[in-house]
Each structure stands twice: as structure tokens, then as C-alpha cells.
Image (tube, rainbow, N blue to C red; front, side, top):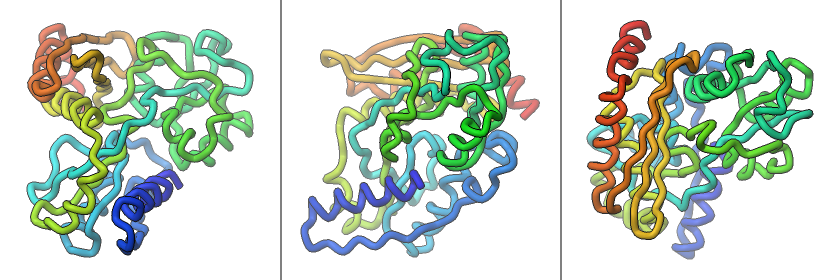
Length: 297
């Protein structure tokens, strides 16, 4: 549902910028979409939403792939590139709960649904009494489980609900001090073959420079950490008065330890900034944690 909205959004933007251009949508079901009864960490991580799309590009069955950048691994196939990123939506997580507007208002022992180890770790760091329940499926499926009383609350990306016209379901936006977003959260990216100059020329006009530098810093942070799908990692960067500010985090899945650091630099140094902040987090104690999570994942 959300993937289709994003593809249609990009198609509309391309048609607007290139009058007369024919844009055909090719729906592709990914392994991440098909396997709904197991956590993403258990089946290989968010990259499962990307692999089939990249295969379609490499086999020339598609010219461009539209991604939620939070699902795109740090390492891309050498033949492919993210040639444009659209202006970022609000990157924050949100709480959806019938009887609470904030995390603090949830009753003790409340059952909270999330499919994300990153969210789980930060929620438990803030509220160790919460009971985290795995939650997969599309947005409608997740909301239905809440309505049927299986959960007291769920935590989702606010951008997804907003894009689907479901902002009214949001009980409250979570401060980034409580739930730092996933790398690339709120960003739509368009991937193409590096050698496909014609498609790149059509797509690159949609590029948003401010979003790009923030994304580069966040992805450099994650790339240096080399976390597994069992590693709760979060990062968010934003431009402020000509400076790029980056916050990064690594946490124990049960929230018992959280390593959070912050740094800033010029936009031109986005990649170096992300790498440097990762080094700070590793030096603070995350190196041992990540090594253990990789070994047990």
C-alpha cells in the first residue's frame, strides 16, 4: 500500500517535470512483503524489501526502483546507484494508541507492537515495564490488531501514516530524544542503473540537496558500524544554519544500554561526519555490543 503510494508519487513528479513522458508502474512483491509471520531480523533484515527490485533493474525489466531509504542497505550493487532523493518528510516515529497521547500515559505493562529492534530498544530504555510484541504486515493490518484489543499501542513511522492520509490516527509524535529514527526514515529514493544515462537524466531533476547530505551522513554512520539485522542502530541528520548536525545511536535490544553521540560539520563533509560519529559511538562502548550481536545473530 505504502510502496504503491510512493511509486505513484514519483511517477506523478516525473510526469510533471517531463510533460509527455510515459511512466509505467511495475508492481513487484518482495520477500519482505510475502513473509509476514516472522520478524525482519529473523528473516534477514530490511534489505528483503529491496533485493527483488534491484534484480528487476539489473535484468532490464525496470528502469527505476522507488524505495523507502530506511529499507536500503548501506552497500548497493556496483552497477546501481540512488540517483535522486526527494524532500524528506517528518522522520519521527509516532505513537498510535486509543487511550494515550504519550509514552508516559501508557499503563504499566502495556503491550506495544513494533517490528523494529531499533524502536524496541529505545522504548524499553524509556519504559522497561512495557511488553513489546512483534508486529508485521501493512499499515491496515497493524492498525486492525490495535483495534481488536491485542495491543495497547503501536509505534510506526509518522511519514507513512501521513502519506496514506491516516494522520488522524496519530496519538502523538515521539521526540527524537525518546525514539531516534532509522537511517533514511522519511526519505524516498530512486535507484537506477549507473550506465542508464537517459533514465538518470529524467530522474535526477527530482533530487533534493538538503535531504541528500543528511542521508549521506546517516548512511555513512551505519556503514561504518557494520551492524547486523540484530543490531538496533539509529541516526538522524539535519541542516541548521549551514551546519550539518548528526545524532547517532546503538542500543542493546532490551534497552539496558544505549550509546548515543552527536557531532556536526559542514554539509560537504557529510560522509566524514557520519564515519567520525560512528567511531565515537564505537569508542564509547558500542564496539563490544555490536560484535556480540553479530556473533549471536
